[in-house]
Image (cartoon, rainbow over all chains, first blue to last red):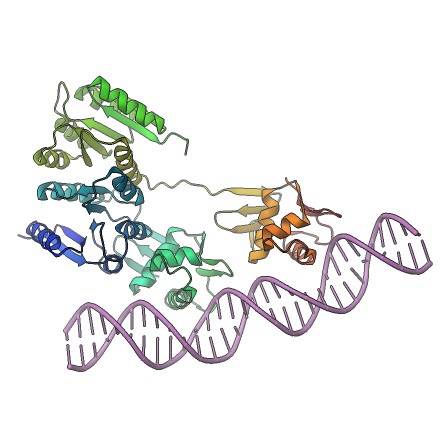
Length: 231
Length: 231
DNA sequence: GGTCGGCATCAAGAAAGCATCAAGGCGGAG
DNA sequence: CTCCGCCTTGATGCTTTCTTGATGCCGACC
């Protein structure tokens, strides 16, 4: 029988490597999601909520390190970096950016699989210590299931809406500046497009607030940013 | 941070290696527990409940793999294996026995430290970071949340009002000259617009003082500047 | 007693920031 | 290929905030 062993997001631009990973992983009953660029990686991650990320450092657009940081902005998904660069400083940088493991190419399939198993094992029985669910009044966010409910009815959020909400939820009570939100949600280099924020905050409010014109959950801090008011 | 970064159990029989680890780790403010044999390792682990285990595979009595399995019998403490054996099968065996990471000797200190940080980061969601808060009588300023409360009711401040208050609060008790405040809040080149200060001090008082006409918190130092009276 | 400088307060115009609607573009799913 | 959902972008009107000017108070000094 073929019980899916987990969903893995593979971020890799080289075709040969991608084929190799696809073959090795699907042979072990992992479900694969693939991305070629950094931007695509972020998008796929929010859409599919993978159980683990295999990340090549040498990407065409963004640096893999940046992808790691962006992911860590809202997610605790295990990240294993695969890289041809074997220098110690590269490893330290990646690990400190939030990666869980660092494997230098070339590597053996079996070692990779063992490290994947080790990483998945850790998050598996969800020790209940860090509750994957938070609540703010009627609003309830289930991180593990990527599920947002409002008084027990599900709210459908687009990837960007969700990321924005997660950002705010993880810093509940604190004000997040426009810049912080833009960099976390849209990635570095978008820090001046405050218009995006306005549009999406309005959309979140329309979906989450009882009276979107007089928000109680998602409040504006004029001249500074936004905040999600903690219970 | 200079506070103990965590308790690490080092299981290693070679004296030189143990000395090396001791030096490297304590330099980074880790608290060390040491064990030479497998049996000792298990005992120390139960006694001291370490935050992480560094485990050499080549031990005099038990095999390190066995130690890993035994530990995993009751504990989820992160285990990083250090070993001279670099064969893939060794790594797979150790990881599948329950180790979280596998580092082949010789390795760089910085990589080891980065991997330790990565492992500790995972198990430490307890961000017990209480934000810096200062109080002056009924007035309370939460810097991290950018939240000002007066007898537990929130006070809304505009960006300039807030910056002005922060300036005064950071030098509580001291007099700040007009020039200092203007340059801090409005930026260099505004040092002669004392009128701004008057307007905004009045506004702050209206929002924070019980009797704005007879201020007790935000006092005027005629001819010099203003001061926030420390509790 | 009158005048003057520093200070407090009020109010109105100017500027900046914000919310919202809606249309076009893009890519993925069927 | 077509449809649909999502992201981007522009236009518009509104609100808040900042700046600026006018006015009155108070104590110091002449």
